[in-house]
Image (cartoon, rainbow, N blue to C red):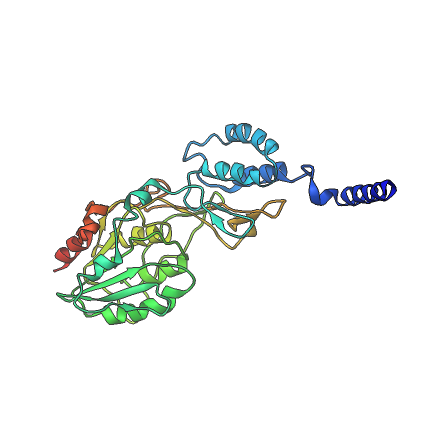
Length: 340
């Protein structure tokens, strides 16, 4: 019996030793330091607002390098998150191992206004059901008093290039038009162009476009479509208006028949470009982790970026969560009264 037990013990020991990697693993080598170095250098090379934001990127390196060295396994995601958060840029993000996107920073104006708008409250001002484009990017209809209304929720893909002409055709005989951009939505420059060029009757200079530190000379906007909507326009904005929505607002504000109403936008003007390849915002680290950091510096017509600063309204109407809970949209009401 003792001999049998001894043989079994030896067999168990051999099994345990052969499977040691499945039972207990030593912290293996990883690429955390390499990832950190690559991310830091990428930002140092392409991010356009380090100087504007007065970020001492060298001191950031000194602080975070030891944290990257000490990180084990997925602990590095916390280091990466905090490193990217130092940019205080609502466009910057990284992907998790599962493919999810994490934004380490959101503008404070977004938090202030994210519940200060409700599509359900807006719909109370209509005497009919609103129409919705096929992509659901635009909700639109005519308010009492023959005032057009279009809520733009998305500037992505080619939705507005395809769908905005139909929206404007439906609203073309109104006495005035409200463009509602009070949502945190980014998107493509081409979609912004598809909107703004329907409101200009002559060439319009584009706002400054700086790619990897070089000012790019872009051609003027040109009127598009079968007609120009030249009647009064109110653009509704707030702190949740972001990125492409801010670009659209800034361009529309240059037109004499347009009034921006609401509150200052969120402030996110870092963009990207598909050419040259180094201007693409998505960037893979040595381990395969991916970060997204802006390479394009978009500016307002006054020469300043709207990064951090936002785009201010022409008429400031403060709206709060309490207003929405009470069933009122004071910004929309002001626009309606302005266009009557």
